[in-house]
Image (cartoon, rainbow, N blue to C red; front, side, top):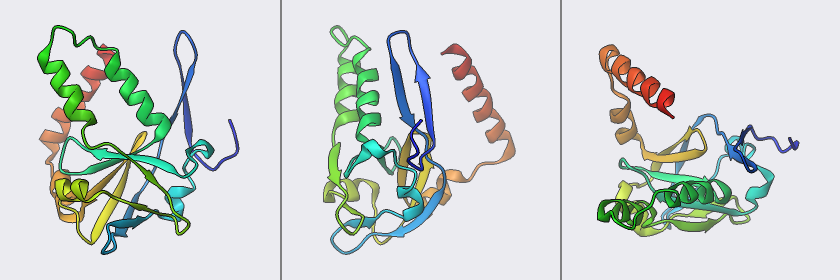
Length: 171
């Protein structure tokens, strides 16, 4: 592993090795009036060297945006392409919806990215946002929406954990 200040997980498959980023932390940030977001230095330090100045931003499943390294985005779209969609309009539709809105964004000299207006509107992001590390991606949430998303009682948390455990053991 290179000494790039990132936490990397190496996943091996039968043909080759895929490197997947694993980010850690939550970061309170602010969008400026132009929709630019300064990437916190503690988060930037976790980026693999290969990121360079390019990230991918897309809509999340919930009311949030998701940032990927370009490499991790390519891995996600490769997973989509493993599912045959020839006979399934629903699969084709999911692929279309999932990739709709994805944009390459450049990290500028001030360590900011410009989030497209359409994506900001989708996630209802204005001013204060929170960046949340979630495995190989970084979610961008409105603070109140994120806090609401996390409200869960112990019974629901137990059910979610059981579902996760079942899914993990099937894969």
